Length: 112
Length: 113
Image (cartoon, rainbow over all chains, first blue to last red; front, side):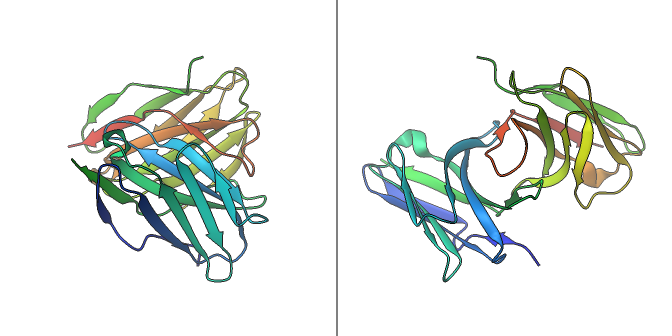
């Protein structure tokens, strides 16, 4: 069946360090992946996306890596800041499907 | 520019009651999707509408229904509420709803007592 899972439910990093959040997916037909950030009391906020014809995509302080061979996705946040504290979700979509499938999420906490 | 707006922000109901949640998409977006997020979990797909037509339905009972209006706003209805329906209900919009990122509202927190 389809599922999107995360390796770690929580991640704690020092302010200024880089953060890496991982995600595994099981649907080999998935061809579009998105990372969302969700702060307490808010809806998911789009961070970055990547399509299956790419291995890497960079945004402002964030990079998403896609390894289709092992069906693995990661989000790298450079120079983590207190404002990065949130729950991060990966989500996957299959071409033509009407829905995103979300993982359980990883809570990122920043130590001063 | 206004993002996706949802109302109400919080709602308390008792078992057996029905509830209607409302959503206004981002201007120009024709697709609206609804997701349920139980505490500690990722959002789960309920419905997607595009141009007033239901395009997709998740694994939810018939107590859940929705519709989309000519102005692309949407309502989610839940009948015969159960305790397990307590969750954050998220509305998301996009241009077409296919193979593109969704923009989420802040959600409606529903508590069923």
